Length: 112
Image (cartoon, rainbow, N blue to C red; front, side):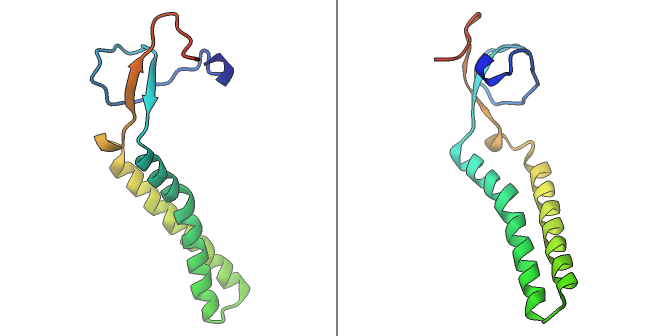
């Protein structure tokens, strides 16, 4: 962990676990690949696509450039709002939470 420069920075992360753990225990977390991929697509690709689609639709109406820019920004803002709402609804879904893979031994640095 020292190589990642996270020696003393600690935060609380909610994770699913079947192990007997205490707050402050060092653990190794895992995230399902499907959850990570869907999250990345939703956060990065969806707003970009909405920006492009909105700008393209307005451009098809032969609108002037300021209207095309405004439509693109509007599409981006709408997508951002959708992403925000979706993330708030998914925050408590156990199938989307990180999972504790294993607990670290006391004195173990976690690097292999």
